[in-house]
Length: 306
Image (cartoon, rainbow, N blue to C red; front, side, top):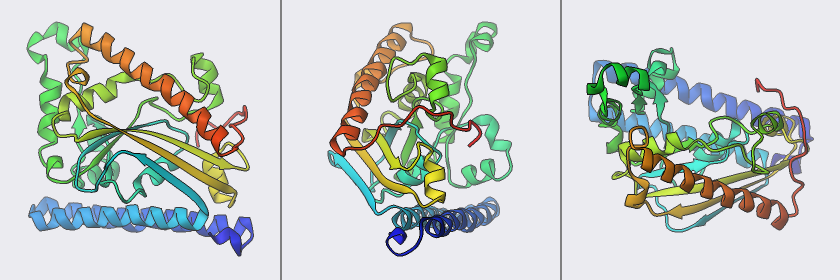
């Protein structure tokens, strides 16, 4: 929006400041309310926390509106902000989180976090304050030494989800496990043109723990268009031209639920299912580029630390 009246560099500077300030302001409020929640664990505090978190989502929406005049979200199916969803998505950039959190017809997003992150300052305390579920996996080595640990990781995560169930939520899972870059694509020898190889374990674990809670799975694809293939750089330089988001609502059935870690037959079946989803997603991304006459991301060496 700002690009209509301001030079790109100034537009990018303003948008960057808005998004960064949004994180600082609402992140600080979440941390402060989290400390209050620790001392006064009343439901009203939790309600205020989620209102503040939704404020962060709205701030992201405002920042994107300022920085990109062409944002299109296509949802195939019925969704509402009072339901529970598992959202799976390709991972192009750190800004994917900003984009997905700004879709106001969906419940505010949350993530499954490794149990070790619970003790990391700010990240752990903020996630705890928001009731995000922590998962602690039982390794094969631990299971071999003590068979009684079988299923304990699922039960632990279910226990950490007890408060999470009280608030409609979109759990986001980036199936590739990392952001797409040409270097990673080449290193993996990925069979997909626009995607890295999918990792099915995270989706399977989320469905195993909360499958009965989810109303649907949201199969999501995100495409950006700008002067370069580096999305964050385009935002900060005021050179992000368009964002396209496509969401397919997928019903969750019993074939998607099972013990991925302990049931070999189910693991093989689920890996095949996710791979089929990824084949279709790769074709869908190619279709989005062609439909909107967008240049496909050129081969580049994106800085891995960004």
